[in-house]
Amino acid sequence: MKAVWYFDLVSPFAYLALGDIEALASRMPVIFKPVLFGAMLTHWGQLGPAEILPKRVQTYRICVWTARERGIPFRFPPAHPFNPLMLLRVLTALEGRPDAVRTLFDLIWRDGRDPQTPQTLALARERLKIEDFDALIEAHDAKAKLRAATETAIASGVFGVPTLALDKELFWGTDAMALARAYLANPRLFEDKEMRRVDHLPTGAVRPRRAEAAASS
Image (cartoon, rainbow, N blue to C red; front, side, top):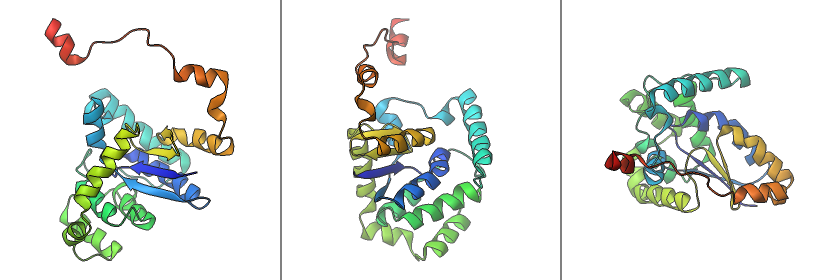
């Protein structure tokens, strides 16, 4: 079974899921695939949790609480959301190397550092043993590869991060890891009558999109 883990460094939930993914990777091959969450939001016409003020507060609280419940060292960076593009390109150039993924997630979400400051970038270069991020990105055409990886993820139905793909089945979010483990134990998990029914459940009502609603008012 092919396993691909789609993530963006901007997501605290991806950091909280990382330990589960590393445990899974100790039992089977897992491809760590950096993608741009912002591009996914644009494609699917969504707002990120941090873009809805009341949801932002709830999201941040649940992240802090979840980390404490699970015993995961966790601290929000000074500002969120932030621009993760440079470091995502670095990880793309490194082909999602798991140790590099862990290093950068820890800098941001364990240590609570601002990933956009020169000091954090210098520390990232030191820990990854890379002298020049720009040269690395250029040498590996990482800008185009990150864009292509994001487009491929979207085409396969990925709409958020973190998402674990097990063959064609997608498991979105930290709390979906238990379901993913159940599916690995029983690959026919979604074949019973009720699972098949909800896969094709009719839509009972359609809410107007914001632009359409504004035009009709």
